[in-house]
Amino acid sequence: MDIYTHKKGIGFVKSKKISPRSENWVDLVSPTETELKEISKKFKIPLFLLKREKRPHRPKFENFKKFVAFNFKKVKFNKEISTQHVTFIFAERYLITIHSGLQELSELKKKINKKDFEVRHVTDSDYLLYLMLEDLIESFFPILEKIDAKIEKLQRVVFDEVGQAVLEEIFELRQIVFELHKILAAEREVLLFLHEGVPGIKDKNVMYFKDLYNHLLQITDEEEIAREVLGNTAETYVSVTNNRIQDATKVLTVIATILLPMTVITGIYGMNVSFPEAKVPGFYYAILGILAMSGLGTYLYFKRKGWA
Image (cartoon, rainbow, N blue to C red):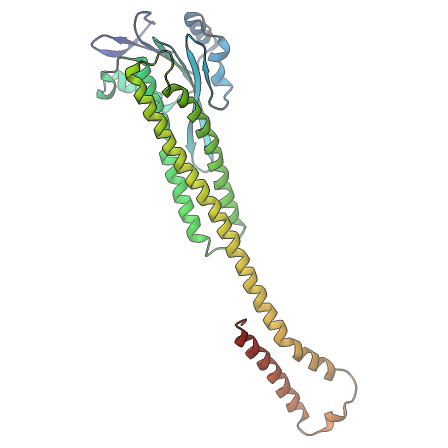
């Protein structure tokens, strides 16, 4: 458990105990049962709220009058979507974060310990909350860039490659974007409450949360565009595949039709019976000529109609 308390003229500094007269940030990284009970007793917070991080679910906002509680997701994307959960409990003089080792919060603590310029003049725990949420929201942009790159690659190969692998990749990416959509929709609801103002967020800092909300709207718009483009790519792939099947069917139909009169003629004269005309000199070559003319005539007819 790490405690950071605001000192006038200095900013937030690491402390051994919570100061009831100052702004406090309590960061719980994979907390023990003893630590959770201590925080529950100190701040009069129901224990089940503090244990929420161990039972992660969709981002949700709850207002308990004296404090608000909500959870957020840090999203990572490699071959599939993975998430880390963080629970925020926020009131007028304190901010509690519970997580299993979130990189963004570790980086923020390093900045505080080094008296980094970005956090040196931070005086409010609600502004600290803003910085944390900003880092979490910014992490969506690299994910969207990766998804856009994959979509561009699919759009290039969809006209050149046909196979189950391409179709599977399209639908896997659509599933990833859909999961991202569900997370963004839930987190947008959380930010909607925050940017409208809740107890503990000072009037001077409300505009920062409005900016976060607008930022998330921009990310949501980009996600919706990616989802729409993926849908169009899937439709294009199906259309290209159908066209290729139709082309192949047309070629086979033309070949079969050209061979049809030849098959009839050779079938008749291939019977094991005697034909009077078979004794006529040059009849064999006449049959070959008829076969060639029937095939050529059928082909020229298709050519004239634009079918071949």
